[in-house]
Image (cartoon, rainbow, N blue to C red):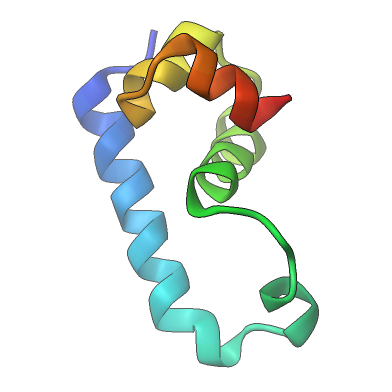
Length: 72
């Protein structure tokens, strides 16, 4: 199980990274119609593999129904 503290640090780091790199990013990436929570989930899946939904809800500090809506 992913430690909630490290999960949030990781997500915050990536949020700051993308804000910093956004002027350098290709326009196709910037034109994606996704929310920040969806992007965070995508990055987590890419770097950590598939977590359980309970890990996603704990990391984003949202209800299970909210996380399911973001993933589905």
